[in-house]
Image (cartoon, rainbow, N blue to C red; front, side, top):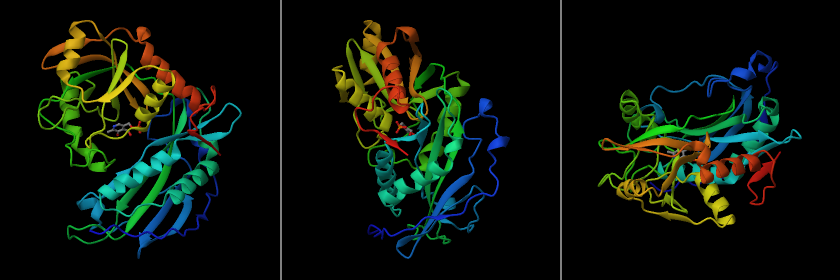
Length: 359
Ligand SMILES: Cc1ncc(COP(=O)(O)O)c(C=O)c1O
């Protein structure tokens, strides 16, 4: 299909709630993804343009039962966070990067792109409006979920011509992840070069549920995805990219068309370079990791992602061989990156990279 031409004119209507629900929320016991703030943004794509851009009370959607998204899965999403600086200013982290990745996903799934300025303006407006929903205690944030779905009520397998773009937000508490245990994939694959692994396509996550359940049943937290041809090259885990510290070098799998281009990953690489710590983006085989473990060179494995920033890996099992990583307190790189990124996001240290947008 030809790329859908998108006209960019838009005006965002405001339809505020009469009464905020914020007083009904216990901010001390927030469960991720279960509490939704007062407003959501919605826009429709039809006749080649974005229209009906509106901020309105959070609520249910009504849709045609034959909607493309419900049958053929034209659905993509993003995940990002708003924080508050200590002086109360709401801030967004790498907003434009998320807008760009969103549109890269849209292109891969033959969906209408959302003009970057509309994506950014909608997020800025909704966060400004619901700024009281950004929790202020340490480690907490307001999670932002933009998503796009195909809404044509037509059962033919073809790209939808109409779409709905929605953004809602959820206050989330501090995320103190336990170190995770991983098992390498031996049977299932997440993505193949040429597939949709580089897109944040909803279907990728549906496909990962069974492998994840089977891994959980065997006592592992998550699956370490391997390349789809040889099960030899390391890709990533559930919702995180991967980093390894081998000797004094940091290595991470190179982006190859099957791995999500994580924004935390990119930020970690920039911080490492800024600090003069050697970092390599390249193909990494599982054999290399097993070898580095056996020689005592494997110091750390951690995942990077918006949710946990950095999540330490305590154990990795490959074909029944369990590798136990050093204690978390001894992990120089993962702990440093996590602290550094959190400090930038909350204004504790200066944003020398230009990643923060103050509202
Ligand atoms: C499959 C996958 N890999 C990696 C990541 C980490 O990406 P980011 O750092 O942009 O959150 C995510 C989360 O968005 C993900 O879903």
